[in-house]
Length: 305
Image (cartoon, rainbow, N blue to C red; front, side, top):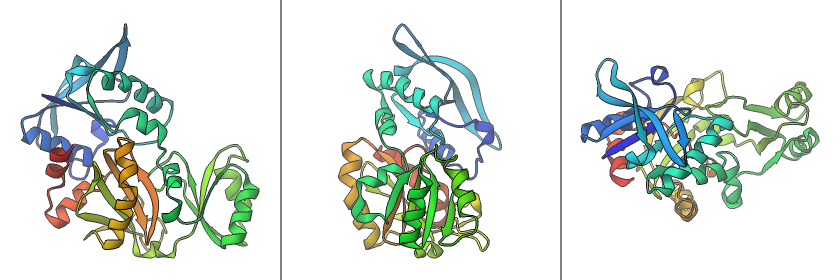
């Protein structure tokens, strides 16, 4: 039995913090043959999917592995897509390649066609009952009208991550036109605008859901003093807490959607009582939750998935 993890360059990952490496270590602990590769290590020859993967030997001070093992895609029982966004042409092509693996019976997590269909920002539009007022547009005038209605809003790029490219603007902001020209590329680029949620000062909550079942703990990412963004990559600090009844209402509300669409490994983001994102590519925060709670996230995930 062998598992394959599709990741960012392994030398760029922090072994003490990275969620993908955390899961790979659990696989090694179980004596599961564990490989990794990059997004461009796949090829198709006469309809057969091939991959150049690297076999993990062990995790010590450095990660020891054997390079460049050629395999057919169906050599692997499970393939984990753990490449960070942006969801660009290379990422899109990867999902088409992995459709072939699915056809051969490989369990690909998350299902590649589901990743294609469910943008991490736009997927929340399926749940208007539990999101803050939201518009998606490339038209600056739409955004201005939305701002006039709600007084303070958040602007988000559609295909980014880690808090990159996010702005908070208030009515009468002197930089409004300049910001809109930048984020919409002068009305050529689609963005999301949402009513500002004041509860962000209490933190942005990450909840990991595996096959419809959440980890019992979330990670609340609290903004630093000099930035409204709570992302850990932007200086936010993480505090793990047990899920609340409000958290479970949101999980239960979206569970049928996740199961129906084969989104087996997601990280949802919640601010106050509102769902703000459904992360389907490479959900993080596993290490932080495990360290603070002693809950074995990796064991739960590998057992469940």
